[in-house]
Length: 253
Image 1 (tube, one colour):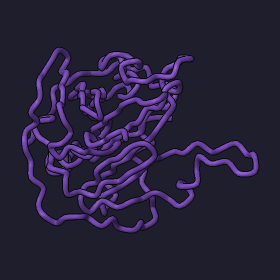
Image 2: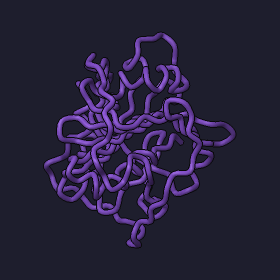
Image 3: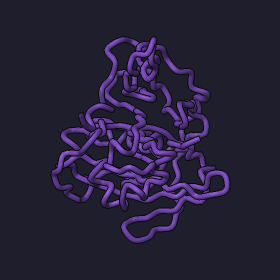
């Protein structure tokens, strides 16, 4: 299975999420300190970056062993990570151990049977839960998805990973989270103050086939939380800031 998992949408018309505010989104540049291999340190998620999402399908188990090509991003009105939307007024979804902000007009496309996944009945083996959250634009061309996976499914180990860095450096972990053959446009280490400590997140933005994907991931208590936002390349200039903001808003709670 692979990164395509998170791009799938439901064919059934879902119920609409109520957006908490109809005011237009404001955009502002990220203020952070750049370090080697594009390490970015966010001091606080207070800027309205209580962000959210996941986009492509993650290669669960093992990623295709193809090499990543680090190509420069195509011309765009908004350089990669040049800015993010103010998401404070967006609907905030709380899932199993995480929260994420949902772009305006996006709809919940989780199927009823997906909510019962992960539970066992009468001693039967529990069916793995495919998605922890799934939202899509009205035309279903753009998706924001969250999946949760045991870290030992992503990297063979007998130890319970407590931090994303235990899966490798930002560059090493790209082999897990970015599919082989993708054009990697951006990779960032983001540190966010949560409670009394800093939590490390990895952010990747890449193109695969005709899709552009923004992916944010972190680890807590042996589980990898992966949020992705995806859209066709031809829509990224208009909607990429909102989708990137959704992905970055992933927060482990």
